Length: 223
Image (cartoon, rainbow, N blue to C red; front, side, top):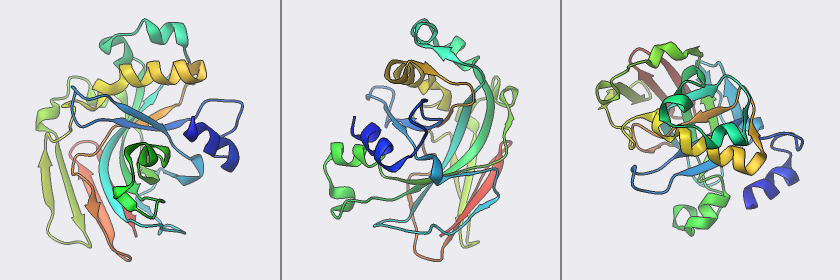
């Protein structure tokens, strides 16, 4: 409710439709998933290096992620009948993503959980790479997926199979049903980014964060 009120106040997306960009995820499959709509004016699409943010509040952090795009309109009734396989079949595109992590509360990450959730679950902005067809991830062994990150061109850090849910598409069913319940439908073209593979990498002003998912693409953000 707070997220929707803030969106109306600040015009984060047109009031007559559902949000087109989301973040979703959780620490494990046993935990409740969180689904957060994202301000559309904070999205960088099809970039290789996202530009320096105009304003930073309390934190520069970056997370290497994978984003999925839905290829058709989904009604609430259709969403309610989905299972994992039918939800995955709705994906028409996949890309790499960097989420910029920031906190507007003066308490920073020590703010209460609901306060952090109201703040977009610590969301500053999102950069999306070039879209690939959904067939790119068909049958993919996520346990072997390599993600490499570096800061300022330094020694790369390697992360293999480190997604908290084991499969970034595992959250699709819960997320699609959440969006459909809240907004009546899920429009074609809606995008969800699915959680970090490298944790939250702390950065300083002037740092350049770069990452690559083997077989899926690479992306950077200049802070």
